[in-house]
Image (cartoon, rainbow, N blue to C red; front, side, top):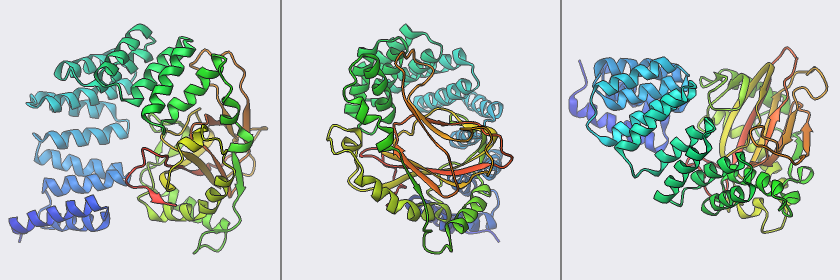
Length: 449
């Protein structure tokens, strides 16, 4: 006998309330109760799919959403949610089929059409079809010509095509519509930096930081612009690797673990079984390896890491520069919160491309499995360097390498460019990285330190 309609509605509402409050297990149980009575209730299928997405289990999310779409093929939200899952798995053709199905629905809402064309453009951009992506962004602009973020998206596409005049024009138009968008100022600065317009670029990055002191991309690129403009009096203290990159050999495990080796072994097992692991995730720095989504919602991984790093973060605070003009002071949060946490398993010849952590105030990496033989000198090392290849940099910049070991913790500012060197050993090199949120941009899921 099925569940009465009034009880089904109440159960679904309670599940949604639990979900919003972060009680995911209770929400899942309620959705499953509804499906036990009627296996094709689309709201329950979509709710469970959303929970699976949040936990990185994209295969389960895809299966649930496909069932829901069969039941309700006219649902815009279900088709869009399914497309998002396909995108996250880099299944571009399947995502585009969802967009084509949505286009065939002749969407009434201009907001829905903007969302459709924006997501479609993102998939085409990931596929390298930049001009086709631009066509969809332009279509979105026709639907909403006052949306600053759409002009910024078009500016970014034009910058990828190295059409600097058009990229500049798009970013400037976005700032005319809304001058308080830090990422747009940063995008304009990137275009100017790419053309060696150092002074103009530095002004754009400073404007981005005025709007958002936590914008690590703007800060990292401001450093480049000031050095190239020969206005780098502040930079030595901002890029002091010896002071700001701190390395700790963790000797004491969190409560509940017999040793650091025991902690590492358990973390490796939990991480390698995590459903969100993806090979070479799109738009991220990992290449030749697996990476998870954010692990904060998984207490089996997030809580031991939080407990492990807490005393070392407190130690790091003691070494901070006292200059109020230093980025680690102006962006210093009043309360320390672990804002992001993710795992990386690099396979032989794998590496992480040069990148920064944005947004973040302080970043770190903890090594839980390091092969005994990493290969040639420097192989597998973590390297700090401020030399992105896409900019015409003339200044010679310093670098610092850290040789990873089991139980090693490295703390550093989020604006430090860093990468890893490929290695030859036969076993994966496994680590857990994290960000501590800055003054702005702290996610609601952050864990107090």
